[in-house]
Image (tube, rainbow, N blue to C red; front, side, top):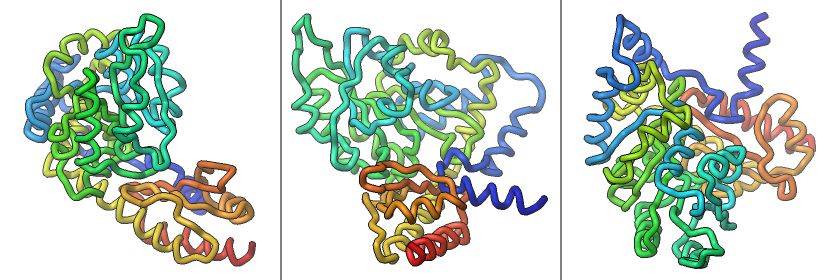
Length: 351
């Protein structure tokens, strides 16, 4: 019986950081919040403390806990745009590929997705997409949205984010950041969270926690008070208002306290670097994108991928190029990484 769970652990290990469990300190925070009664819908002490802590971290912001990343992204965008408006994003962006059309359905707007070589938008790409302003036959661009880190594991530097904010603001647009793994980006860049958001001119942020050890919880952060005025109502209508919000807020608060996120994300990033280095040393294996957070993309011959999938679960990112994705988490161990690296070497040798 004991071999079953162990094998299953190996099978799903590198599929996604969502597969990891709850970080022990975060789990303890949920238990601590469970004592007695507390006001519902965000009037509890944990949510108030989270708002104060978020302001210490990001500056003078408005903070709203939500259940999940898609809900956070959709409600954030729905608050700042009209149905006749558009969002510029990368072709590989999570809001474009992995949210089942939810942004377009619930905002009524349009996603203008742009091809990129590395998952990152550039000022030149954004400028090239700014067409039809004032023309009643065209959607009107309202938001530039970036994923930090990108879906390819690459990271926007503070300079790159600032340049995009400058282009957006010059055109009267807003800059939204999908930060499901924002803490991994900060660790990879060696910065704080404010340095890659508020200091760069970001207007709206979806701050992620679930992929970094939370049971479930994200937050929508507005860096301008006027943008947040309608959010209470959009969040409720968007089914993202938690009645027992203390349990969501307690998790986010613990992640920020003492910068626990540096521990969770730092470990995940370090395991990705270890895995990338091991993979790069195997003949015939190519690391497809720079490893700047906790994702490793490698190009493998088809027989090697097939052999590895017998013992591990992960996603084939691009069938034409043979690129697969391995994700590391706070729960990934050096032994886990070394086992996969050994299996990779064996698979290449047998192929």
